[in-house]
Amino acid sequence: MEPGSRKRVLAWALYDWANSAFATTVMAGFFPVMFKQFWNAGADAALSTARLGLANSLAGILTAVMAPFLGAVADRSSMKKRLLGCFASLGIASTMGLSLAGKGEWPMAALLYSLALAGFLGGNVFYDALLKTVSDGPAMDRVSSLGYGLGYLGGGLLFALNVWMTLDPARFGLSGTADAVRISFLTVGLWWAFFSLPLMVLVREERLPSQGLGAMVGQGISELRKTFHEIRHLKTIAVFLLAYWLYIDGVGTIIVMAVDYGLSLGFAQNDLVAALLMVQFIGFPCAIVFGWIAGFMGPRRSILAGLAIYLFVTVWGAFIDSRAEFYVMALLIGTVQGGVQALSRSLFARIIPADKAAQYFGFYNMIGKFASIMGPVLVAVSVLVARSFGAGPHLAPRISIVSIAVLFIGGGLLLLGVDEEKGAREVSFLQG
Image 1 (tube, one colour):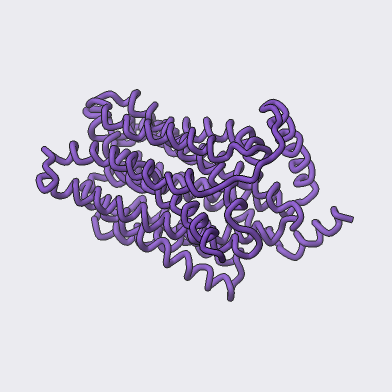
Image 2: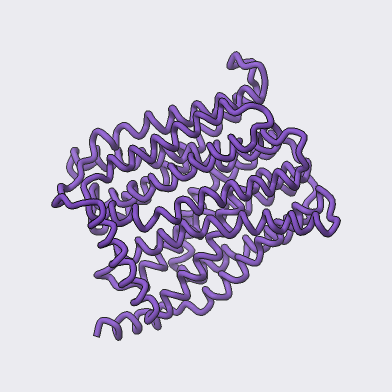
């Protein structure tokens, strides 16, 4: 690869390093803590869990509704960087705004978080689309993996610094833990903004013929309809996408609700964020190991093994009582989280038409956006139903984590019916 190309690849990958700080420090780490203990101060623990689930679902709905239109624009314009910058700016500003939400102001915190998450997810549509701008052919796998790895590393490093700030706020000139968490939101915004600059400066887009926004959206919807019609005749792909929708929703729900669950059980905040750090730094090497295992077992069986571990975690997690058990649960999640995500993408690549890979992956990514809705709602509803039947504030959250098992069971059972060879025959028949 030429020096100029290497610079563009690194600049592109650094955006993953940049925005992963939001996923670790805000989504999985401190927002659930602040939402329950500060913005919902005095509220029932089960009620704050329900509110957090609904806030996550609101952002998922916003992004899922926008996804087809964003994809249409990304594929048919030279505005990817500009639109990425717009969504990243929304995410950055909203994240930094969280530091201004006062005690008890949970509606404001929920709104800012939903906007920040929409900026994070919406920006990723254009970030993914720019992959083809900086690489092609077999190099795309290596470049994509570079971004994936830098995301784990960068997000983990800033999160480690933020955890240190909360553990020893006096060393940083802060008055206490709450101050440290609010400053952490500011550091995430600054980190996200600063490390986005190389992409904005060094990555150049291919100039495409200019056309109106309406025309681009119309073409995108037309292609989406064609893809949907084809998938109806490609049963293996359809079954996989339904399976993926269910189990990846379970994965995402655990990511965004794990800390809140630990707080509901009475575990200390410091123990919970330490467990998250464990997941972050275990995730990347274990994803590589999963890729190696897939070489022997195949991606489908490897994913099923990961889902079996997730299923065990959701059931066993309802009975944990000690800090050590929570750490073991975090360790198990860390071993499979990255692997399930990475192998799902590679399995999908094996069963789709090679000449329509980008189109089908666009549909795959849209399914992923919708997959951030069901799980948090399931958690919220199960908590509220459990409380309505008399379950106490410590029993209701335990019931809610078991409810997530439905997503892994349903997704796993459907995945059992995904046959790569059958999928290849269906694609060949469709292509004539």
